[in-house]
Amino acid sequence: MGGTPQRDTARRVVVTVARTGGVAGTRREWRVEAPPADAADWTVLVTSCPWDRPAAEEPSGADRFVWEVRARLDDHEYARTLGEEALQGPWRRLVDAARGRGDTGARD
Image (tube, rainbow, N blue to C red; front, side):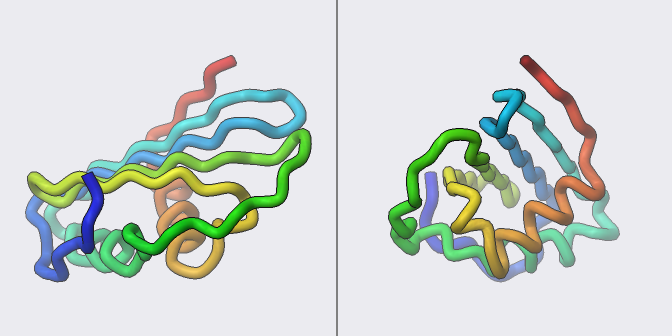
């Protein structure tokens, strides 16, 4: 998994974002399977993320969120785990889009 995503518009785009941690330690998950009419926009969101760039070292501490971001563009899969401090720029845009449009689930 991983690698630099292709820039061509994917026919099938699936994005899953999970957030764990926080005071309650709850896991929340959002999943989006983009309709064909929106695939180009979601492809741009996914390909703008630096999937191959090494993650910056995160400050440790209690009650911090950890984000698991997974994306599938046709047959290519990408995955990254980020601390809340790293959730900036293209990562923030992708996560916010998935949270705004995705089916959600909470698990204890």
